Image 1 (cartoon, rainbow, N blue to C red):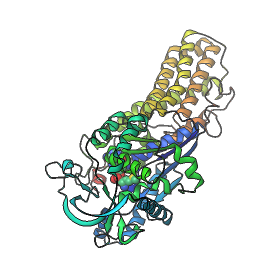
Image 2 (image 1 turned 120 degrees about the vertical axis):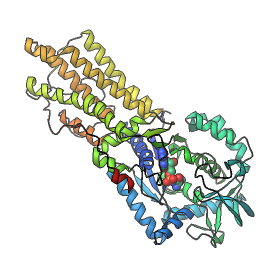
Image 3 (image 1 turned 90 degrees about the vertical axis):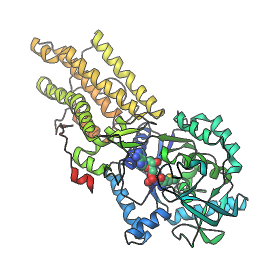
Image 4 (image 1 turned 90 degrees about the horizontal axis):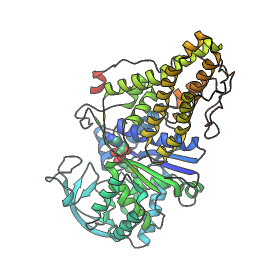
Length: 520
Ligand code: MSP
C-alpha cells in the first residue's frame, strides 16, 4: 500500500514473557525491522515498536514453576528478548513493557472511558477456559472437546466478571472490513475473519477476579478485579506512543501497520478494532498477517525438542545470513518449514556463490587490471550492455513495489536476479579475455558496470543484511551508508574510487548440526 504521508509506523506483537525467544518471534521481529529499514532508506519518517507482554495467568504460572516472583521472572525474560533483538540487528525505536506505569495508566484510562460510555457491564459467566489461549472458548471453537491450538481440555470456570459489549460493534466491523479490504491482508485472513463474523459475535470478558489472579492491571472501577491480559496487551500499540496527548501518537497512529502471525488474528482483527471504536479512537491503518514456521515439516515445540533458537544460528552462520534466510524463505502469508540443511544450501548457493563470488571476482580483476581503482566506462552502447543496464534500472522500482505490497521475499529475489544477470554479463563479456587482447575499453566498461550493479545490490539489500551490505558498500570504495533515491541512479559510482579487499564477504559454510544444543 503506497504510503502517501511519508510516514511509517510498524509494530510486532508484544511477546509473552514465559519462554525464551525462538525462530517464530525472531521472524516477525526481523520482518518488521526489514520493513522499517526500507522505509527509513526511502526517507520516510519511521517508528518501529516492539515489546513484552508481561501479565496474565500463563506468566504468573511460569514464574511460580521457576520459584520466582512474577516481576523478577518477567524482568529476566524481557532482558533476554531485548538482548536477542540487539544481537539480531533489530533497529526498534522503543521497547514497551506492559508492567511499565506509562502503559498501565493508558489501559486504565481506556477502560474508564469505555466504562463511562456504557460499553462495559458486570455479569455472570460460565465457560470453557483455555489457559494456553488465556480466554474462554466458545463451543463451536472446540474440536473434540479440546482447544484446537493447544490440544488441551479447557477448564470449566463460573464467575462474575466485567464484559465489553463487543457484539454491539459486529455490524460496524463487518462493514469496515468489507469497505476497506486493504486494511487486513493477505486476503485469505480477511476472508477468515469475515466468515467468523457471520455468526453472532459474543461480548468479551475483560476481567479476572483477584481471588484467582492478581498479576494484572487493576480495573479502575473495581479493585477486586484485574484486566484480562489481551485487553491490556493490545493497548501497548498506543500507550507506547504517549496516547492521547503524545506528539508521537498524533504523528504515527494514522500510519500504523500491525504485524502478527495467524495465531493471534482474532484479537487483532476483532477485539482491537472494536476496542478502538468503542473508545472513540480511529481504526489502525493496516494489519499484515504471516504464516507459521514449522521445523522439518513438524510443529515447533518444546516437547518435541525441535525449538529453533535464532541466536544459535546467527552465532554459527552470521546474523545477516539468518536474516536473509528467513526473509527469503517464507512467502508472506503462507507457512514455511525450517531446515538447517536448506539454510546452509541456500547460503552457499546464493550468498557465497552468486553474490560473494561475483564480488571476489570483480575486486580481483579491478585489482589486477585497474590498479584496484574503479575504472572509467567507455561510452559504448552495445546490445549486451544495454540489456544489462536496463535490467539493473528496472530493479529498484520492483524492490520498492514488493516492499509496499508486503512481499519482502520478492524484493530479495528480484535483487538476486540482478546479481545473476551481472554474473552472466561477466561471462558474456569475459574481461579476462579482453585484457589479453588489449581491449582496455571492454575491460573497463565491463568492470565498471558490474561494480555499479554491486553498489546497487548493497543499497537494495541493505535493510535485509545491514552489516554485510555496509561491508559491500565499503569494498566498492564508497563512504558512509547508502541513501535512496539519491544514489539509485546509474553512473553514480565514481571512477578512481579505491576498492578495498578485506575479508571474504560470505565464506562458504559447512552444515554444523549440534544435536546437544537442540535438546536444551
Ligand atoms: N502476547 C501475545 C501477543 C500480544 S500482541 C498485543 C502473544 N505472544 S506470543 O509470544 O505467543 O507471540 C505470538 C507471535 O509470535 C506470533 O503472532 C508471531 O508473531 C510469533 N510467532 C510465534 N511462533 C511462531 C511460529 N512458529 N511461526 C511464526 N511466527 C510465530 O501471542
